[in-house]
Amino acid sequence: MPNLLDLPRQALLDFRSRLSHLPLVSQLQRRNVVPESLNLSSPAPQDSMLADPERVEVWRLAIERYVRTGQVVVDVCTGTGLRTFLAASRHPRKLYAVDDSRLLDTTQWVARRNGLDHIDFVREPLRRFQSAERADVLLHELLGDALFDAGMVPRMLDMRSRLLRPGGRILPNRFEVFVEPVQLRDEACIPFIWSQRFPSVDYRCLQSLREAMSPSYFTRLVRSYEVEHLLCEPEPSFAFDLETMAVDGLPSVVRYERPVVESGRVDGLCLFYKVAFDAELSFTVSPLRGRHHTGMTLLRVDPREYERFEMLSFELELPDPADVRTWRWRFL
Image (cartoon, rainbow, N blue to C red):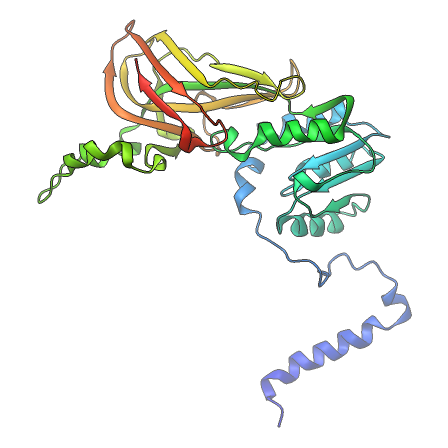
């Protein structure tokens, strides 16, 4: 005996089945129907980038300036597809959206809903992707929390050599990296465990084991609103250009020595960066920009106080820039 609760649902399915076989209906482009082959994924991990109007506007202007009709364009790690959709509005001859995550299905679904039919969606790891002809433009935003930890430099240099035609563009290509001493707001401070005092246990003994602790304990993400102020006038610690740099073009050691311009407590070294498409178009991930949603990596230190005009110096070692666990930093 059929379950009475299933009857309305079964009737709806029967009606849809009959409707789909009608001549006019079967020929309609059903953009609102999710194909069975699609496995939609939440776009949440990339919401913070999309919620940054300044960043989105710079992308729009850059693509408007550098993507043209007749070009071959590859969007690397497409994600939510914003770069792909902006590029599609410029009518390139060939547009590839390359991603090996489930998010590609979500992006393909959005493209279908918006009538963007001339995009080649490719589910494949970047290292295996190969286009039939060299690209005029590579689009990417392989920006990790510590800039390099998403493997941006080796991955983009590999694609530069395999996919990009001579004289082609990488967007964005120029980067300035800042490593600045910051004082956090008191409510954002998280002291090391050996610095805290508890009623029934003394954790100071753990300080002798700090070299054996997981490197992840000494880093954390902070947001712009958690930073009280920078102690020094910010200057790039180093810069690079993905279109021209060599494979070994990143420094292995960064040394910093500058006068303190605003007295305060150093709670850590904040890593942020400026991203540029050319001399005019750029955006920055900086605590000085005001509220934005992008996380910045904080290299934690034992707090120490500095007075104005005092010299502040430290050294940062980056044996493998793509692996924050190998980084080491110390005051000089």
